[in-house]
Image (cartoon, rainbow, N blue to C red; front, side, top):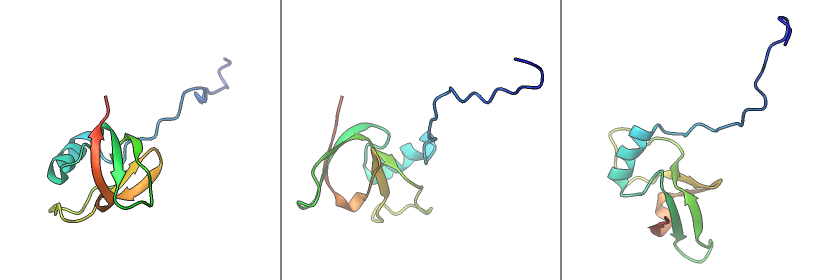
Length: 93
């Protein structure tokens, strides 16, 4: 590479940063009783959606002080939903 060229490293894969840092995510997971950051199968209330499997992520941190009765905005594989829509979850290994 000549001294006038700049490498942009475009061949490096793009990684989307997690919406919430792991330490905060773990505290939220404990407060809400959800397996955030883990691979899970989520079954939803009612018959509108089938179950979905993937890494459970919280989209944004809730307001502090935390109230576990407030819904969380969650995501699995691009599907966005509320914690209130979850009927049950199972950790998938």
